[in-house]
Length: 387
Image (tube, rainbow, N blue to C red; front, top):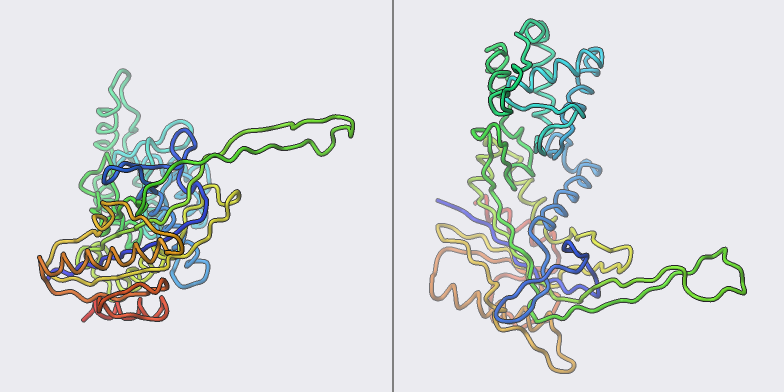
């Protein structure tokens, strides 16, 4: 029986520029015929990964439960080997040769060709294999490619010259390392496509429930040490911003999450809870020193659904929400979301349980089961997944 977990959130941000495009303007998109504010899914996932890092600092998650995205895997592996009492210079060369065995080349500046998304357990396991196979790596045929070889052929030549036992051992540890963020968001290794991991989670771009227009903040700055008889600003410019109530949505395939975490007995449930909580409380950091738009979501709905397709409720806002004087934009958005959810459930059916945190006073019309705190909601949702 396939189980999916969906989370819907409404978050009304004060004036802000949370996620910028290449011109520095807040990202936006056309939806339902009107311009909407937007926060990219990549930005949202980055915020969740930073939240995971804070849970590691609080000892709620282990450092082994998360991954790093880096081009500096050579440095990371070298430091692990130095901790195993290997000399730094020799360790760097061993790491180069070991990575070449898997067709992962390192450039002259010590960085890989592209960002590698590796679990901390993977990095430690790779270092331990290099340490264990130390002598066989040194005895391997020099992997430097013949002059004039194309990059792709050069990597294959380097891999073919490596010790087969080394390649076999390394092949086994490139498995995601039971890292939550790799399991949730997936990864692609261009030179090792068989080691790609398909994401257990999909995250939508957040869209404002209403139409927006960009606004501009004109600012000036004055040199504190300029003579008193000098007038005028010493710097000036503009910053674009908007204010928007965002509809945010994500869905997790529970079975895929468990599979990606290698059927661990405990980690999938802890990871799901950490993701749901992070999705609610983690914020994009763009221009926050300028705007300090720290506005928590005021409506959260988590739905546990079995044997049905995912259902984004974005079309609840296809017609942009409009409010009259003294009406709440977030409340009106919550009521539109509830109406759309009930219409879809009536039309398509399916087994579902919905858990709600509503701070807007919206008319829920019997939709879902309400809780007074996020922690209670998360407890109930995770328990329903494991039933």
